[in-house]
Image 1: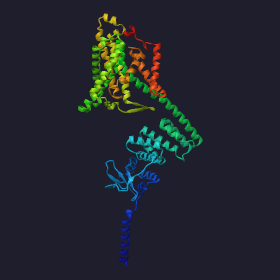
Image 2: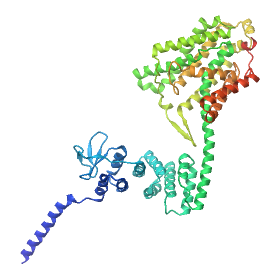
Image 3: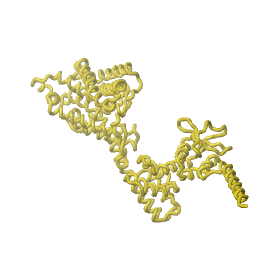
Image 4: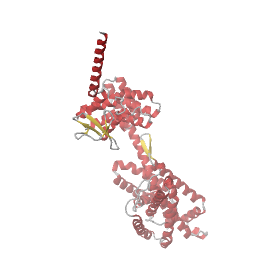
Length: 537
């Protein structure tokens, strides 16, 4: 009897075991069910699948959502199987991670619309909110702030509680506030606190978020949102003025660097040098040649390429300037209109020579690592290349002032500027001073080309973009006065950037030109008049 019961029990257990083995392949877990929804080709099912997969905690969740965003997630409507095509071309089953030889014939990419794309971005943000990489956590928090996906609130709260980095913690707080603002069952008190957090952020994204809040809010919340929008708009208007001022300083530094050499030659020698822009161009092409040699032979020195190019550009452009003065300019002193015509023709010759040597197309000049990138200051962005150019310009200006004040050549240049005949009678070789002055002005234009190569196209026409503005700076500031050139460059640069948003780039330049003409009618010698040979003549 006992043996018979034991046999029956064994048979029953064996039957259960066999049924379980055959039934297991037909049963799918929650994650597999969620993944299968991608194969239904319905936007509502895809949205549900995104949420379920993202919250599953499965290690395949992030690859699935990333593949969906990139168009690498495919589904077979017949078998309800979903596949991931990796970036290397291999294929895996999205539900199990098992390798697959090829996609089924009926498989097609899972479709997305604009709403689903935002959902995908939010899901990816949620998946990286707890990443060990601080940069990824910050990016995820910013993504959630934009999407304000309500389902991510528990994850954001968890990340906020664990975060130790102050800036990222603030980003999590802002993301939480964005979710609360659009949460239907949030209390008025919670929404008011959220509005205060978003208001403190104060940028365009905060303004857009509050503007999207709508007018169907409780009166107290709507009033607080309107007040926050007005405050952010005022704050952004102030920062816009600061941004324009920075752009003006940046443009002014470029104009000063291009005009400072012209101020020397025009002030001391009375020469209207229309080839000054080509000296700038020569400096830029010197930088190009230096970088090409370094790339080919000494790639490890690339970050020092500009430091190497600066003295070389000064020597190259300065030597060409001395040659020009000795062979052309020296025969045209006292005839400014003829120097204008001769140097204009010379500029065409130099442009064509560069076209013959380097070709007519733009040449690439790279930014060293220490001049690449940008940083935020309040609500404005400052690029490192513009900041370094401003510092470099001021350094060149200070060195030039010290040279004019404390060196023998500087003393002779000032003497010739103030009274050429008296300087000659005191034994100063004015012809030598003229050659060195022209070479100095050309050399400074050459190092201006080094700086301009970092923010402008290096081409045979590079100098033509700055020659007219350089003359305006020199005339406006006062011929031969370096301080006048400094003030004139930054004044014109800032005025340009404040007029451009109102009148446009072209009309803004025209307005500046008209204002300078009217100013010169009242003060023919510019802002800071300097007595020199050109004035005496």
